[in-house]
Amino acid sequence: MFAPRDPDEYLLDTERRVIRIRRHWAVLLWDTFETAALLAVCVLVSYLLPPAAWVIQNILWYAALLIILRFAYVVMEWWVERLVVTDKRFVMTTGVYTTKVLMMPITKVTDLTYERSAWGRMMGYGTMVVESAGQIQALNRIDYLPKPEEFYDTISELVFGDKQKQAERFSMIKAQRAARGKKKVG
Image 1 (tube, rainbow, N blue to C red):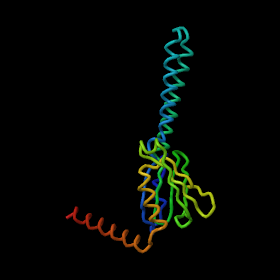
Image 2 (cartoon, helix red, strand yellow):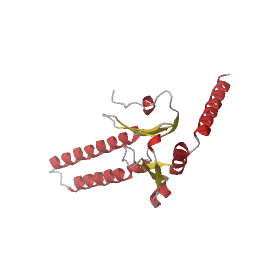
Image 3 (cartoon, rainbow, N blue to C red):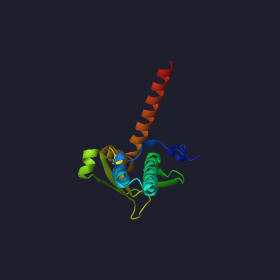
Image 4 (cartoon, rainbow, N blue to C red):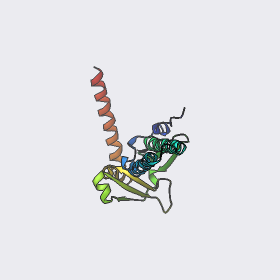
């Protein structure tokens, strides 16, 4: 009921999925730090209060519960957010209760910019800026991409590569997968 649809359900039958990822777990670092700090403050203040201040202690414990629930919701949002790149478009789905689907055709991409900070190099994430014919699209900046070099190379090949070779490569991959599937059954 509350589970969002799988991003693959939004794809057309004629599309080939090339990449399917969720943003890097580092996107949760600030929220994790914030939650831990707020919980530590709640616990510390609760233990410093005299036993007669039980009403304030109860309020602090309920505040701690709300902090934990908020963090759980942030983690759920991160978990359900997916980016799917096909041979025709970018599709990103977000939202736990209200699903939001962002889409941008691959044909609109005119330029790719790849950024990687020192933290990004250490932790394995980067940022991709996708520009399209002077317009700001829904997916113009994608932060916290895992394995950004592979992502950049794959998108560059899709956008600027030889379309005939791509079609041949994808048909070869499909044939190899079909052959492996037949070997496993028999």
